[in-house]
Image (cartoon, rainbow over all chains, first blue to last red; front, side, top):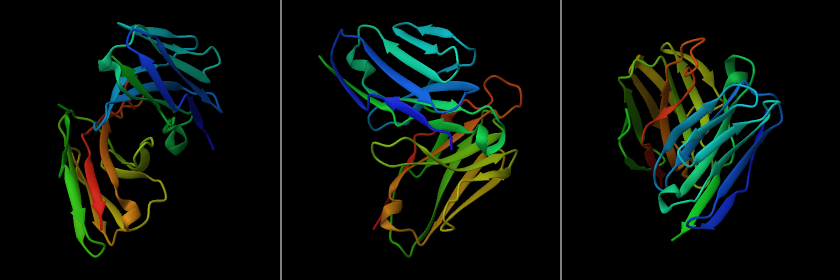
Length: 114
Length: 117
């Protein structure tokens, strides 16, 4: 079945350093979403990418969707302690029904040392 | 604050108990979901209701029984659970409108943390 691989599993950075997490799908995706889950919290939607090669920015966060719509990345510039949490990508397959449901990556847990 | 409200926040139950988790949203969303999340793992889909009809059951054991009384409410009835069912149970909703770009963007509730003794 469809899988979404996400790396790295953990990332420890010094405050001010950059951070990137990557997702790769075994199949072409219709779209990909990114969620952030703070420690002890629940996943919160960050962004959705739909178009091949799409790049979107939210302040210090840059999201990319690959040309083949099989990979995506989230890059954070100059991390802050408020960026701490687990970042999940979630890909949606090209078909409807259960095959079109969101498949979550395993997440990247980001810790930031002040 | 989240626009999806879940109760209770915490629940401890024995293996012979019957309990229910409740979820409510007033965003007019037509799709509602139950996810199970174990520590350090991603959310795992259990059930999807679309327009108040069960559309997806991801091979969940019958000791979990979902119910959608109306378009705003979603329940998860629990009976004869096992200790390995202890987890964070997340409810989510999406607008579910075909062709809408945000159709499957999930708004999660804060979750119900379940401990089965």
